[in-house]
Length: 195
Ligand SMILES: Nc1nc2c(c(=O)[nH]1)N[C@H]1C(S)=C(S)[C@@H](COP(=O)(O)O)O[C@H]1N2
Ligand SMILES: [Mo]
Image 1: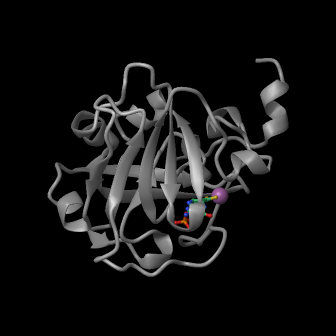
Image 2 (image 1 turned 90 degrees about the horizontal axis):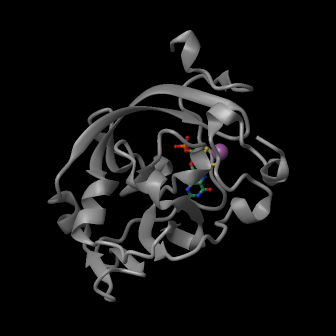
C-alpha cells in the first residue's frame, strides 16, 4: 500500500479477511434476480437475471476496502457493471435523493444518490480476474470505494430508489449514516458533531 492510502484510525490487515453478519447465502440462479424498484422514472420495477446482468456494459476498478471496525486492505481489482449503467437503464424519478442497496437475508445499506452514482461505484461480479468467491459476495457485490465497507452489500439483490433518506442495517445499529473513511465517520453519534 502507499502511505497516504491509509485513512485515519485504520491499520492494514493481512490477506483479505471476511467481515459480514449472518450466514453466507447459496446462489440459486433460477431464483436469483437483481431488481431496481421504488421511485423509478417509469413507476415500474426493473429486473435482470444473472445472465442478463453479465451481458451489461462492464468496467474494471482498483479499490481499497476499509472496514469501519479498523482494518483496511488494498489494491483490489474489481470487475463488473458500473452503478452508472444501472442508473441509465433504470432511471430514477427526479425526486430521488437516496438509494437503499438490498442484499440476501435483508442486509441493507443506504447511500446518497451521488455516492451510488459516483464514477467508481461498481456492481462487481469478479475480483482479480476470477468470479467473486461466495464468502466475498458471489454472484454480485456492490463496491463503493470511497466509503466504509458496510456501504457495500455482498450478495446484492436490489436497489431501491428513495425520495428521502432511511437508515440501512448498520446505520440503524449505531454506525454512521454517511461513512466517509477519510473523515473517520464511523459511528452515528458523530453525526451530531460540528464540521
Ligand atoms: N450482505 C452483507 N454484505 C456486507 C456485510 C454484511 O454483513 N452482509 N458486511 C459489510 C462490511 S461491514 C464489510 S467491511 C465488507 C467486508 O467485505 P469482505 O468480507 O469481502 O472483506 O462487506 C460488507 N458487506
Ligand atoms: Mo466492516
